[in-house]
Length: 199
Image 1: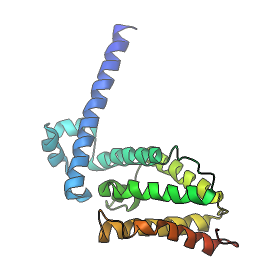
Image 2 (image 1 turned 135 degrees about the vertical axis):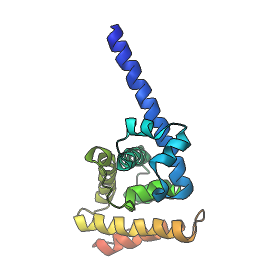
Image 3 (image 1 turned 30 degrees about the vertical axis):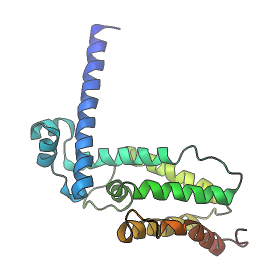
Image 4 (image 1 turned 120 degrees about the vertical axis):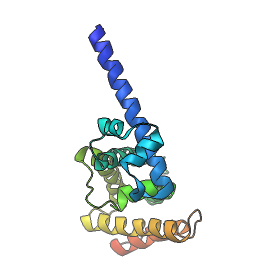
């Protein structure tokens, strides 16, 4: 390895570490005070750097939100992997909803950024959005195994299960008033959209 290559690698690693430190500070801020509380000046103070240093890594506040969205979408995709197969398509679907609801309710700021679009004028880049698309493909796969293959099935599914999360976060944070309804909700949706209700 040449010295120039080694130096370039060191600089890239240092840049990645600095970006990660800023993003970690940004997550701390929004988890404490909400997504709208993020400011570049506040982020610089939280991270112990100057505002120009923040601009050296992110050219705008939306660029920070985009990087945060990308991290959240990657975590979302990772949370959907390696679900044990119970041998029952229905039980697997219920388990997947439990896992998704746990992911959402465990970090409200992350959930809001991914699923509620609360930042005016912010649209995630295709690169940041792509892990979330892949995660939704897994939902489509679980639904297809239960005979749900039409686009309207996915739309109904996401609308109802997201409503379940919203109710849990808004009205019983830390509890289980709505999450304990997951199996009922899955049965209700499948019964509504299937010719033959689940057994």
